Length: 501
Ligand SMILES: [Cu+2]
Image (cartoon, rainbow, N blue to C red; front, side, top):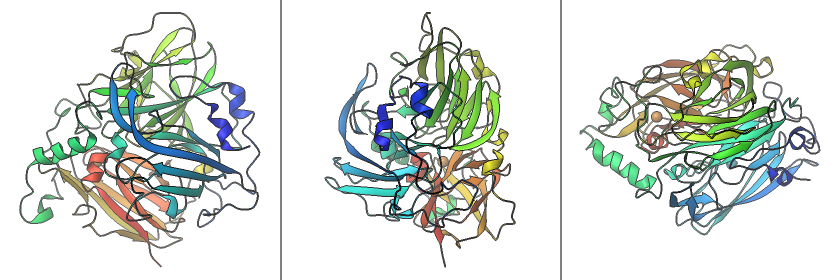
């Protein structure tokens, strides 16, 4: 039995029966499953151990025309849908995933949030050569930690096409106190609506005007203060200005709100919702009308459960939440933060009869208590052991809209000095957001701990906010740290984190 059998779970609004979730999670992985806090191999193995369960799958990246529920768009996707096919494994499994590149461009796959072998990380020019048009590449890695993840290219702004899909790693020790599961993938959509993401980036750069002479002199300090893009001014706290791009659509599981994905369940059922923000430039506030959500995991890692009305999801962030469903039809709304055009993302939860809410429905929960990652505390099982840092690195997030350029530590990626760490060190990353925009900062190959101890791989930094992140350097390789606004990343807001002997 392989992970393939778990792919009966359906995206696009169909639920999953309880038994399928917890009952048949397959044979336990051979050998001990590394826990997030316990002893771990210094390098997740790149070849399967004897007896290790192997999950094999083929992903075909290709041009396709998608029906978003009315609008049809030419785009690029994994197979014939966006989100693409679910990849599902159990913690400790060995994944062997072949990417067939039928795109007219180079591509790669990055397995976002997975503490995997460096060679499988999917960063062209750092961990692999790009996979050329017509080529293929097989990613092989052990997925050591359970949780909700996703995957996408790490080339240009390809993420803002339809190239994204969920990756779920089940926990063999999961109590599974729920009846059904729903994977909910959020996206902002522009591709094929008269513009491609490459057009969008080119226009941002052109509108930003020329860089002043002296190269990166404009970076640093308050270089971001001139940002006056959409959603500014009256944008509510805590995120200040949000987003550079005006999108015509916001999608949940690939559907526009006038033809929403529908999740069918029974009243009283307890559902685990796995929320993934696969958007490129949009922070969402997510709420389920008529319900409060009990948040149980952030970026795959368990937290002390908290009940909230709604929660923020930055680009690249994931949250799991439990909810016990009432009787009726309820809107799951993903409201783009700080954006006034393009409406909102909507899906429906149907447990009984009733009129479906309209595409502009505004659940009262959106005005209630909205969770921030900094409100959460980690579950004790994943808290990093107490230890003083052996090394400290500083990261200053910088940039501006005019000129349109973003960087870290005084220069864009390629010109900035990579951060370095030695294997075995506890590294403190002192991050300062020196701009007037919010940036979701993402680290490859590791999770870090927030000051609260919360374990994450992507964290939102509000304008001018500083945060000390700590991580154990336990995964040798060359890794990226970058803003998960894909336009910022592509404009330079990335830096390397390199292990050095
Ligand atoms: Cu950014």
